Image 1 (spheres, rainbow, N blue to C red):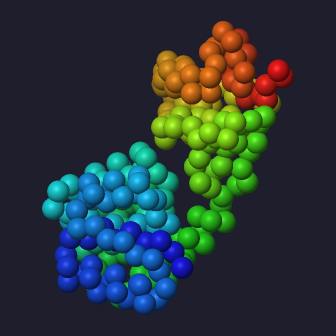
Image 2 (tube, rainbow, N blue to C red):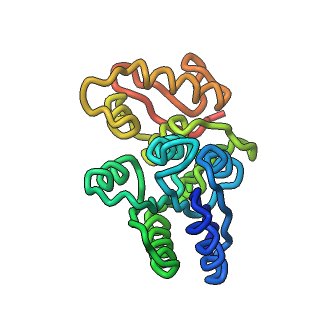
Length: 226
């Protein structure tokens, strides 16, 4: 069973699909507009999202970008748009799969199971660094048992350092892996996010506990020694 969020404004498509997927054992919630769906993903993250592109309040492609800014939830685009360029654009924007209408509930169910198999098998184990715990699967971080409220980029930055625990990571590596800027990116972007992350970890660059600067090289994550 999966927690499925269906974002579809056409009642003729949404209602029977909700009923069919529920019958197949899924826990299904629904939204007829994009912005309430975005809020739903933030408040009660589903296991997978089925997203129509023709929504009344916002273009589905724009909503996809907004969803990807706050969540890595597996996402299947389900739409009548069958243009190859549009399919490629949505996959490049972060969709995990693309299915063209008309489709059956059985096909959607199979796509859900396939996407969840792929995404769940890629999740690494959580990382513990002193009292700091980083969980890639849940995309959560806790410090001394308290949840850290991190932005998407702050979490990605912390996870990147945690996966290389004790090793120096250059700012150019961070720009490439987190911001997708292998060339021409500005290190000020990294410095700003490092500053925000340090503040949430209760430290500063001049008085580090977890994130240590190696002058002229980069930064590394270490467990506190005190």
